[in-house]
Length: 111
Length: 113
Picture (cartoon, chains in turn cyan, red):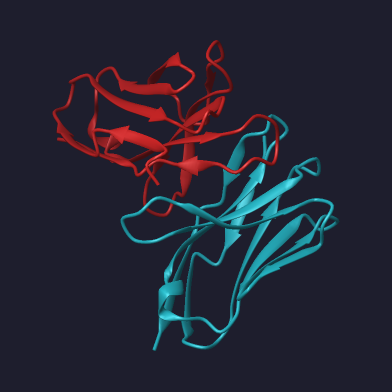
């Protein structure tokens, strides 16, 4: 089955700096790659996603890049703010259409 | 949003007891899922259902069972709860096909003592 690895597990950044989280996957047939943000005590919520026919997608301060050849995709957060502190999960759709999640990255934005 | 509703939100139960977590959705989605979240282990799939007559095991189904009572309802049961089933449980839904966003319920905290 699909294997999703996410790095780093924790990330501490200064407010205003950029944060990058990377995920790798194993199934070359995977074609949908969402990112979820989970604030403390809340449910995961979709923040951005990308499909295999696109290499990059941006939404304000967040962007996702996909390298299908190398089977990895990354989340980029620019100009980080305290409200960006959360756990971020990458996910990959397997051949059955269900999502396989990475283990998560705890992002801490310090003032 | 309240489109995916889980009950109970919090429950403390004793080892060996049967416990049911219920999930209902108003999104009209065919697909429903139960995930378990433990610190550092992300979200692991317990069971999933792509329609009312379809039930599939996920990666950690041992010790759990499910029932899809209707398109909108999907319940998770622990027949004989054990302490290492203490976790945060999420129900989720999505539309059919690949590349559809998964929407999570608010979660159910289960503690087995």
